[in-house]
Length: 108
Image (cartoon, rainbow, N blue to C red; front, side, top):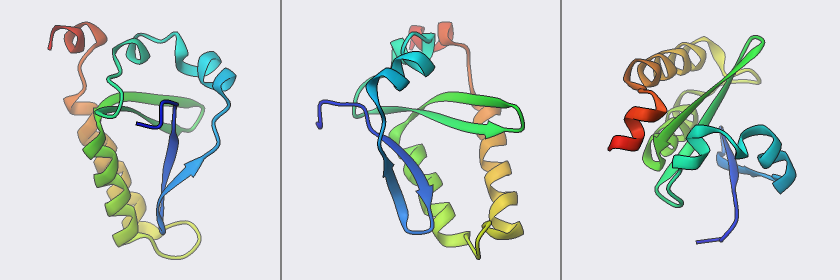
């Protein structure tokens, strides 16, 4: 309902908004097939940086809130701690297993 793109990341304090320059959005994801399918206020593009690549998933917004809740519960210290990192890996493994192609999402 803000009528603009919002970038959030999970933190020990909850969902934290990050300033997102519209031109950055356009150059990074604006022309992607997943961005075309995004339903405002219902779905989100969930990104994860892994080594030298970025994974991107189209997910219901509640999945993002689940991620924020997990990190709030488990995060310890500066880097989150071993338990939070393991849970984060398991969370994204589950998302990746359930992920379909953009063509499958378009049929839903």
